[in-house]
Amino acid sequence: MSRQLYSRKFKPVTFGQWLRTLREDMDLPLRAAAAAAEMDQASLSKAELGQRLLTKDQVGKLAKLYKVSKTDAEARLMVEKFRQAEEQNPAAARHALMLLAEEAGLYHAAGAKS
Image (tube, rainbow, N blue to C red; front, side, top):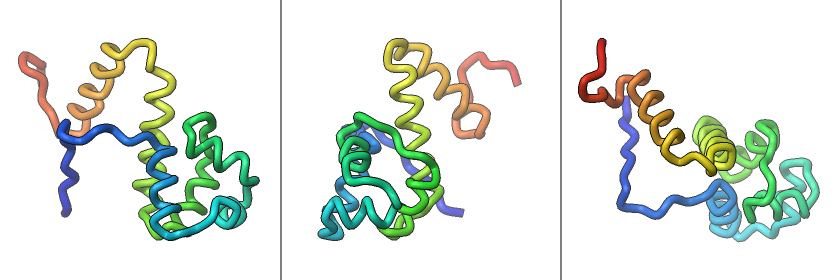
């Protein structure tokens, strides 16, 4: 089983920035990527700019087009939804992430009861 590494060394990349990088790395014009995801060009542009979230269906189609894992793409969408929903309460958001990590067995809080 492969292990995902997470680090604070890198500046966080938003979902939109990640999508734009994938598209540009393939030298695809915005209109071609939007057509492949069955969406209009303006919607994809807004998603890349962080002004709009995509549906799971659109993300799945873009993942296929960009040849990336659908699971990774959907996870990044979840992160972006979480980031946008909880931007007003970063302390609670960090705590929620620690709780999720603990549930997944990736982290054990000091003093936590098993």
